Length: 84
Image (cartoon, rainbow, N blue to C red; front, side, top):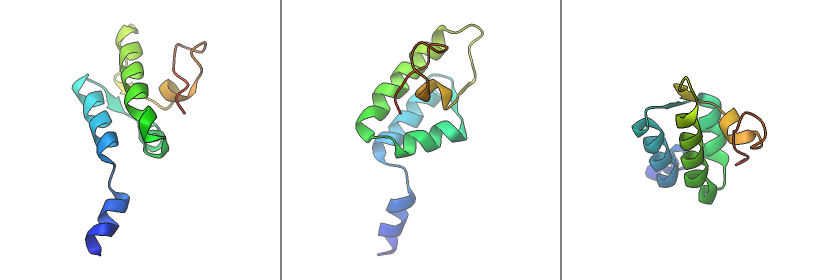
């Protein structure tokens, strides 16, 4: 039963993979962005992270941290994504 408790608080495999993709692309994830991704529909996480990484890579100067704004704002505001 103890391992079940650990599983509840641990990020899902899909979320871990998304975080690895963010780090591999050279970005960090803000705490607020992590919290948003952790409650997001798991089927959206990969697509949202991929889009955010792509957009952040096109910004000059390149941001170091992907914030919650990258995932909440509609495309018309600063080019961020409406994934939430």
